[in-house]
Length: 261
Image 1 (spheres, one colour):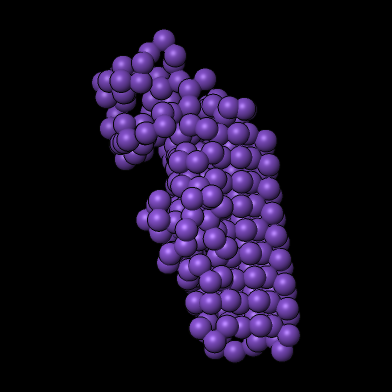
Image 2 (cartoon, rainbow, N blue to C red):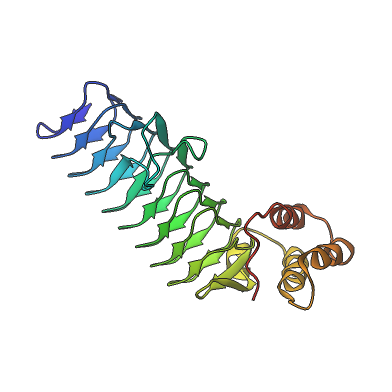
């Protein structure tokens, strides 16, 4: 174990013998740090308000703050968690809050997630695997980010919004409704503009799968159709492969409504 002598580490904390804690790091309360995780200088982990669990092979950069209380006036305390998986990078000045009793009490970040400088993940957010949050991306409480999403710089996402799998939010977007999986969205308020063909090609989708998804997305973005009508046409006009099934489940389960241009 490598813990710099200037670091302050709580007696309640558990740090893997294979982890590294840099100078002037402050670790407060119940914090678990897995093997091969590096915590750079001046980062702060934990608080009296809950537990922070950090997996293996993570890089937590200088000035990051993990495990502060929910930014919610109604928060009255109680045990909650921030759980971070493996092979993640948390950039300089990023902030990740604990969960709250309004959610399931857990803020969760998956694996291979890149949270860039000064980005924020609010209370009760659920961030899937292989997500990128670019500099100054801001997620309010209870946001769900499905796997393989890219959030551009200076993007804001309001409470309870879902960002669908393999979607891309362009820089400066502000999202207040669910963003369809597999799409590129932009604007204030953010709406999908097209299929994320470049990202999906990189993910290995065939031309036939791309055409099938493009047909479905065009139907959903056609404002002459209601959402139920668009779903009905997708059912008849598109092959029901795994991507179409995920898309239609996402739309059918939306509580805030999906963004449409």
